[in-house]
Image 1 (tube, rainbow over the protein chains, first blue to last red):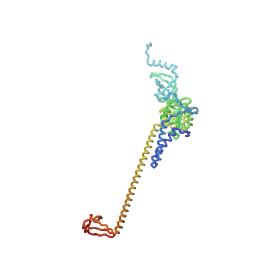
Image 2: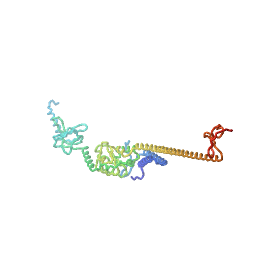
Image 3: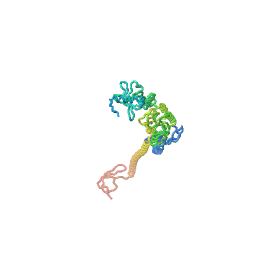
Image 4: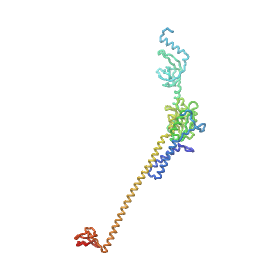
Length: 79
Length: 374
């Protein structure tokens, strides 16, 4: 996928895989204190950002009409 | 008022005449659903045709029976025949000349034929199924912009994973023009750099869903580089499009659920991870504390041993020093007196007649005390 700007979903995916990596790294005993603190802070930051993305994003809907992207307005009667 | 009394046969003959001589009831066309069909040994076929409110007995005599159609329970047919009366049972029936299958029957046959052909060709096989990306950034939805399906899909995406970008590719999903419209939409959707294409439509009759059973539509799905999830009709509806898509969902909502992850599940995972991170850090601290304690203990132990060694060294030295001093003193002519091995410094410590030991620079003397002077 080559998209100019990374979408929320793309960020989320990257965050989630980094968090998993951090969890693994933190379990390795030979980490120094500073390193451990840095990993922890990075992990917590990514978790909070991911939560924000999930909780705050709004669904963006467009439609393809005659080869062009136009905003999509749902039909009447939508609950 | 008719006062005559007729025999049953006479009356039946009259009814038969009324019905069989009525032009409206001859070469009449009728349609309905087959039930109670019996292929008799004689070659005649007996069955009933019905609709919601009525039923009609039918007999299809051997010379007219077609070998290209086999009547089965529930089959929708249209027929041509004459209404006749069968006097032994006093019943009227349709004497059938022609039967043709309509609606579900013939479409069902077409469906089966195409399905089997494509199955043999191998385009339904698992090796062709593309994996569905677990975190789509963009999904394309092919459906009618006004149908229930788009509403269901959008609602599901909004609830589960609003971070995804949705692009609707409008298509005619029913009736005339549907086939061409679906093919065009599939081709267009495949160029949108979408992670997943959803091909959805709400429930309907087999006829309503027929566009999804068209060979060209199946091939257009097969040609897509983007993974396609189908969600057409209700749970019980299966179309050719479902067989050829990379993943089949039973409904449009189910298709959306398969296309995007669940926000609730992800949020749950995130907070579990947060706890795990905190636990990891606490564990790290506890572990480091323990290591520190251990180092402290070792240091203390080491220090104690060291001090003990130094003390001993000092004591030895002091003893040597003391011994050295004593020798010098004795050489100057002083001596040390002891009673019972104890050094004495005062006459009060001894009594007359006691044995006194005297140490000189060279040798010892043993003497008896004869007198003490204070």
